[in-house]
Length: 124
Image 1 (cartoon, rainbow, N blue to C red):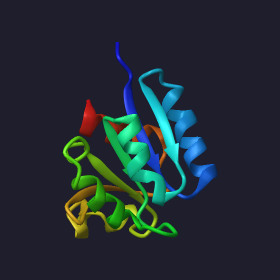
Image 2: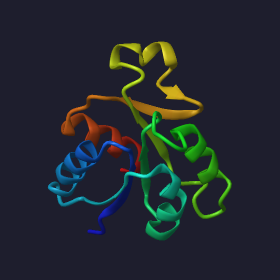
Image 3: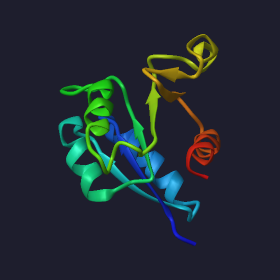
Image 4: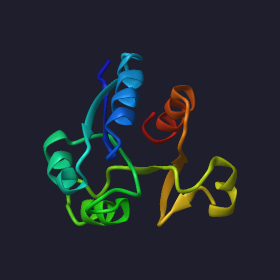
């Protein structure tokens, strides 16, 4: 079985390391971390992920800017982008129709089990 490739773009290093560990522990995913939003486009081009988990609030480029930049590239534009954010709580998801700027989102904090459930919804 081929592992699905997930790119996590988030400035919180401790959080990204924990998510990477939890996802890779399943044996189903290969995970790459990018903690500098300014490098996100380059990292995505090199890694060619199946899914991108993207924080919204980051220094430098915010998640909306990164998502817009990814959509300008013919190779990257069809990769699902899921915002992983603390700016909206899980109980607020219904009022946002489960999306921000046309992208689905997952509210932080999220358990590994729930995160994997969401990932499977977008990339099987």
